[in-house]
Amino acid sequence: MLAQLTQLVNDVDGAWAAAIGGLDGLLIEGHATTAANLNLLIAEHAGLLQAANSAYAQTLNGGQTRELYLRGERLSVYLCPVKSEYFLLIALDARSNLGQARLYGRDAARKLEPML
View 1 (cartoon, rainbow, N blue to C red):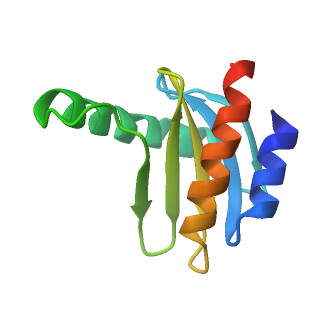
View 2 (cartoon, one colour):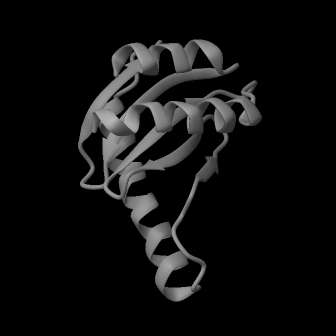
């Protein structure tokens, strides 16, 4: 898994971290080019993804969440569910390429799914 996540960070312009987390908020595996706290990133975004899942599936009748992108002033994160209880997180900087994150992220999620 680590090799796949490292390659993902290298392939996506502006990516500085990639990780697999559980919806329980626990980090499974991750790679970062900074001293970022991946445990904290996974824990916080697990709750956001759960809220999006609940809103779309139950309240809005929109089905399962397929991806989630959050953009802040200094941090952007792309989330892609893997199976029903895991997700892929890609952390991006201001010069990031969201299209690459989506394309390579979905491909990486498909490759990582059998390992989970």
